[in-house]
Length: 121
Image (tube, rainbow, N blue to C red; front, top):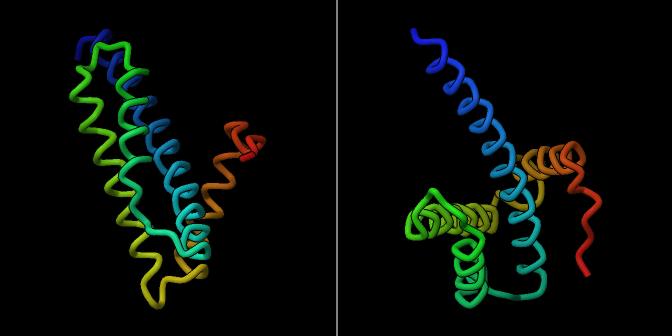
């Protein structure tokens, strides 16, 4: 195999690992958000907030990904967040068991990344 190809593939593999960690970090925070929404009696889906997220993602995109590609990726992320929040809200999926381990993994990832110091105001 060409050494340049191998090197580039290794770089992609490393980025993929970071993406997985960040997506799981985001998912853990999303699950926590879902718990707060349920306690406050709020709906899981917030169309206005989703549109804000999509607009922000498009605005942050500097390429080479096409803005429509970025939006499709973020729509998939939002759909998975909603699915996970809905699943956790079902009987037997409360704040214990699997969701707790996802939350614990999220907190560890936040500490490793330095994001654990971020506070909501």
